[in-house]
Image 1 (cartoon, rainbow, N blue to C red):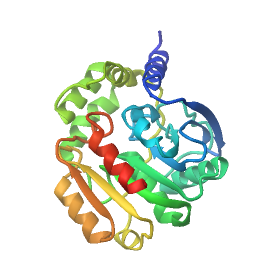
Image 2: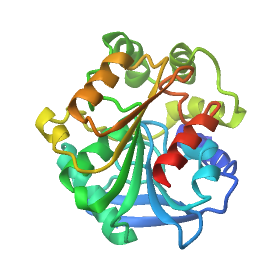
Image 3: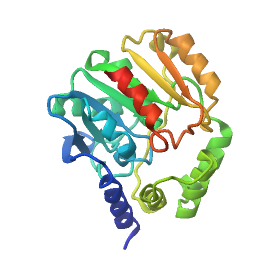
Image 4: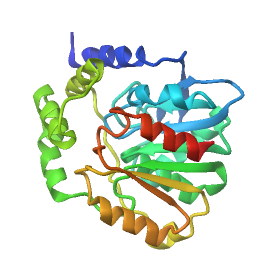
Length: 279
């Protein structure tokens, strides 16, 4: 089995862990075809979930049951990243292209007024979209957002670089073990992480931080949930920057969570905070 085939098999295995029915659709965009997994009641409030880089939509397996109790959830694989979205259209050069990509998803899926939740790189995309098209978004939840309010730790980037340049299953495993402090509780998720080393990759857009003036002007209600043990960035600094630049935003810190384990490990408190904010 090729690396890509093994990855897609592991991806499908995790999707089968979702405790809800999934309808998978392919949405055409100028940048390529986007795979979107749709779950939840048809009359539920629309909620768009944007995963972290390299995690794909499969990452929401521990959250989707709680979120679909009240929401119609749309979980795409990010264009330009690994997963079942196919980046075979226009190049991705920056935040403007990713915002245009999201605009197409909003148009095609009729998502105006939807609530949006993003993790890590997905939070960065979600925040840029909210700053550029605030009327399209009802509420915005950012999970340990990277390069949104502060830069990333040099030590984190140095640890990640070998895995990104020459990915192997062992390098992926070692990096996640270092950042999270352990191994995933779910064997299917561990197998998925290992398999990402063989996934077909495209170019991920360089993440430039939003301008402070744009953050101060943000009119969308925002919740920021930070991972207390995140090694990706300085958590107290990020919290202080959020409170200084977006004083109306709510900020919560989950002290036992790490950056990469935030959506998947012991998710009860995260799910509670999201349900409360998005209600």
